[in-house]
Image 1 (cartoon, rainbow, N blue to C red):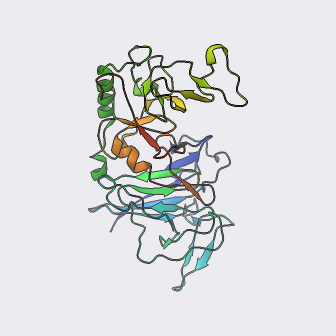
Image 2: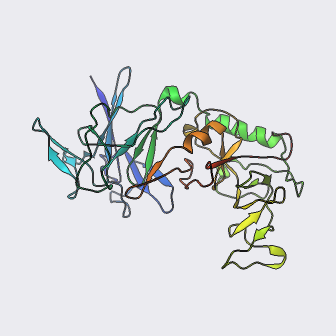
Image 3: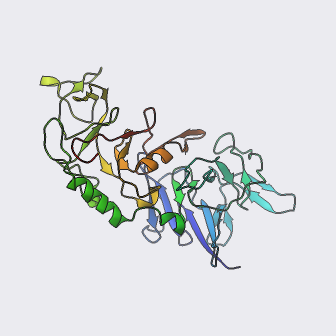
Amino acid sequence: MFYLPRQIGRSTENMIDFVVTDTAGSSTRCLARGQGQGGQSVQSTISRYACRIMCERSAPYTARIYAAGFDSSKNIFLGERAAKWRTSDGLMDGLTTNGVLVMHPAGEFVSEPAPGVWREISVCGNVFALRETRSAQQRGTLVENESNTLQDGSLIDLCGATLLWRTPSGLRRTPTLKQLETLRQELNAARPQCPVGFNTLAFPSLARREIVDKKQPWVYVNCGHVHGYHNWGYRKDKGHNVGPGGTAPASTGERECPMCRRVGPYVPLWLGCEGGLYLDAGPPTHAFCPCGHVCSEKTVAGWSQIPLPHGTHAFHAACPFCGTWLTGEHGHIKLIFQGPVD
């Protein structure tokens, strides 16, 4: 059997195929090998040689994950504080300093999305229950009836970055970038209107997803009513200055929806542009709270129930597009447009 090995970590040395770094805020980014300058990234909780994935070169192309990776001397690299031990058959095994956690979906990721149980993977690919904290020296209990084989929807957490494993069969049921652009154009072609200003709203181009456009839809995340941008309806909070007429910057305090009078955050809507994070190719009718990323109902429902590791032993559901912690009763809201979009 021949395997295709791939290594993932914080180091920018040539042995690492995918350099992963955590960034300011809650989002993460991946850098292709060769973009670094041969040094190390800024201080990070991600291991320099975090994990390696071995993929079979022939059908069924099974992929297995192992903690740690090989350095330039072709030796497994583990930090000084990493847990290490000798197994009953005389081999050495260990865990990275902050651990490599894996969660396989309880069902089929795209048809019945349900979270599984987070486990820790060792250097030899053994599966363990989680340690008391991420960097504890005492390893968890060995879970003999589970494996390190990745499946569609498996999540890999490197303590600073969470990766999603998708298979070709799973990706075939998700929208391509071209299909997402078509969905955006269909939304705009319906000419949704602001129910107060009666101006036509339009989702910006996927290429301009970091620049708020003057026609961009905004939403009150506690009720789902979609409006154009306005700078009124602000509810005074202690420590905030309110201008004439109750106006204030949109990013501060909470706002009162003029349609239903519910008070809550008021944010711009962004169409989620990473097709691999979708669970289906359904219409973008819902948004994550409080960030405002828009996608299908199945996608928001699935991700809202997945607890992602945070810190040393906490878990919290987060938006897959930006990593923002989800808030509210469900973590998402159905969008209420004024016009024929519904």
